[in-house]
Image (cartoon, rainbow, N blue to C red; front, side):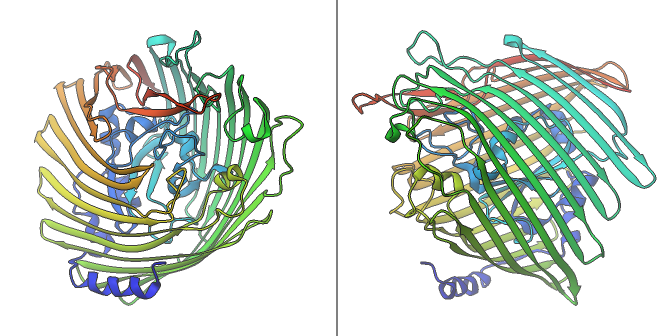
Length: 623
């Protein structure tokens, strides 16, 4: 175990090499590409930031979160063998793997209960209601979440004062794709109101599995987002229903007879700030997953019961609460608080007479944290945070005691800014993984240590940045057959933006990643680049060009995902957009493991593209 004493020693050694950041408000001024709303939400102490402003999202014509997700470094967008958003999937026979990615909307986490991460359903959600998106790498600021994360995604909704009125967006595309969104926002008597409704029907390319009926991941989604906000409180309502074909589903050889699912997710939250120092929130979520799976052989996770079909509804619910206190004492910005979460398994589908009795139905997490952000000069900030969490479970599973410790340093000096973190994090095993394993011996937490550095240079018309991130996992939860070896990660990331002229802007990104002992591989090298060009052809015509490149040491194949979008502003209230995605039909693919259920021999894996080739025409109207 990586003891607190060793961690503290490394922290002290790390401080001598650091050169750090300012008071947060001063630091924000350094980044000229931020819009006013994003400046209000950015917390530089949350981690290493990849920011998508309102302007950048509009230039990209990003309509869903995966449009954005597939462009970020290191942890990019993937779907798993069940057709669900799962960026950390290995493609093997495993439960949901991306529970270490946390997703927030207006500062409130979306969890989807037993699964552990809102990315499962919200990873490809409609983002028409979103103003800007912040991706934070490294362990998060301890005042943001009940549970730790590799990556934290913050989406912030549009402001009713800026987007008042009604907006309608209609789109059609290849293979019968269509979507419709309707949004209304207003302000009355000091309160803001917004309601956003969207519908998407997305028939996707079929996947050849060697059978007469290829695999399908078609889906239809209905999504509702609404809020009311005052000066000291806010309330959110979110409803999402997704009916989908689930690719290979639970079939070992990806030849299911039936593989379908219907997901219904309800999210309610209330935030209140009774004083300038106290803040609280209450969150309730309920997920109903109706599944229908059948195969002529046993299904994954159920073969030990001799069953080849499962049908019915899995119901889970989550209740979260938080009470925090924050106040400035001299140069110390102190924050502390109590956070709690309870996840319940409320109902299970039926899969035959031999189904086992279920005893593991509840998991609770209670966390205490303390964080000090100390501005010891006008342009530097030192932060130190500690958190203790108790994870309790029923059904004979052991409880877990988790510690998080985090040391950060930020500094600005003229055009230069610098950031660094040293941290020790413990992750508990997700409830879904525990339930699937059906063993009380897999409760051991994952221990992660990490060290990161970032340096950035900013001028009026351009900025460039370099980031170095290193992590090591002990008892890693990412490997699906063994966690005895320590998994290590090394990332080198470079990105920047350049305003070539008032009409033309360029953004670029490149990273190299090295993984050791991950996904049953001794080592893995990963390379990626991202280049975009956005410019005005005329006053009312805009062109966007984007290219994503991937290569790794598994197959050394080059993948290119090209996007081209042309938009015409026909008037102040009407805009038409023509957009082509994955134009080369060569986007990054995920390899899905297959096994012959009769012989146990490995079959040729299936290659699933994470981005369909598609052309869409869209009309947007405001009134």
